[in-house]
Image (tube, rainbow, N blue to C red; front, side, top):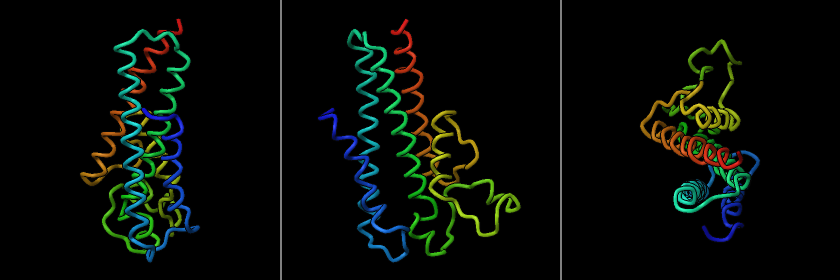
Length: 181
């Protein structure tokens, strides 16, 4: 949908406010968080539209390029994993700027280190890599692997990520492999 350069630009845009400072601070301007959430939302919608267009292409046209279909499915799936890693990072306990301030509100995700503190140093906090891994595990197994969603919004994010991953892997990738035969 649209020019091929549009989605990569939308993916890079959240990196600007996220990288404005080396670390997110509790005193960051509210517009940075709002802009970040809006951009993450736009990328999510663009990725879902990309997945829908791939499925539409499979159902309504004769597809003979299995390799390009697989590459497209991989791009949609990888974008899905990255974007939901960002969603999890941004929503848990109010976001990275709140967590950086030391405030520990109610968690949206429960990591094993929180349940069993002997598994990590006393100062352990989830980092972006923890959220990205959670997204990868959910996107590849269609279920949370280690971090459990505790709130309705976390559960909704887990479910939507799983649906996009399932459709991408099961429908698009399976059809693409079939075309390659």
